[in-house]
Length: 356
Image 1 (cartoon, rainbow, N blue to C red):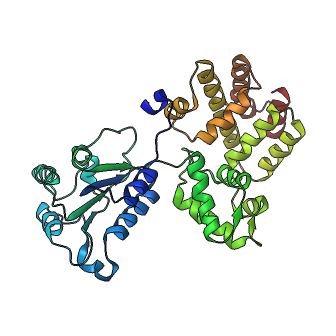
Image 2: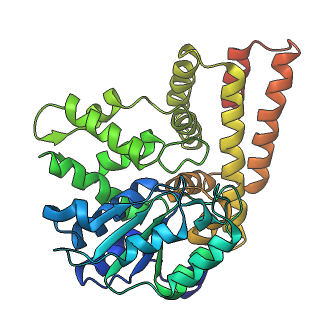
Image 3: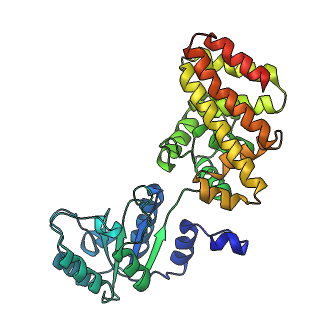
């Protein structure tokens, strides 16, 4: 919220830790957490590689298993002096108490003792605590997260967006000796589904798709056809493309996309659900824009990727709020007309597009 009010975009955690690592401004306790676990693992590796001498990694680095974990084990690991490394590094991976969750065998007294110890960690040690993103809407900071924030630093890795996401993709193509233009990168982002909260697709999935594109591509440049042939086209993306074509008065293109969706084997009621969902999003974005909300505010309230909001915004310009409400009501009505047998599914959808 503060970032929006000040007009400045909040720096992503991976940028912050990159800067901190460059000048080695890393405190003796850090917590790596957040929705994008790919970046949590990346950050942990960067920290280990920065402070541990590879020649004596087995002596100077300890990864503690949560099973049977005690505060004494943590203390013993942290207080052991390093041999040839810059600092002793101790990793507590996916530590449930860091999110306020219970860990079998780790009592409330153990947690209190651990909280006290966080403020007393030796300067020769770096304790890394990692955790998943909080479940559901429970975003309340745990006692451990609060303590780490007070005596060390918490890095919360959310999904990438905008230039950060494009840079992530471009670097991976460049590392494979491939050129990829921004327009093709944007197509990959769109077709991959990254940032769509309705499907589980993260940087692990995106990197895997990038590897597939590289493996199937010919030449030094990644083309849009490489993306189209490698990525399984996202159903939601095609539904939006159909609605976008309608909004631009390209009815022939919209009918072609509808035909492709129908022959792909997708159920008509699933298509209707997606059409309604997309129209609901477009209407929400329209009303938010009319209320004077900016992109950052919309993203925070809707909890979806900025690319989806921007796409919806492009359609809102073509319709009034009342018209969108009317179109959405029509989408709801189709469902009943098909189920009652008044209209055949294909015909019902074609008539709907004709009337938008």
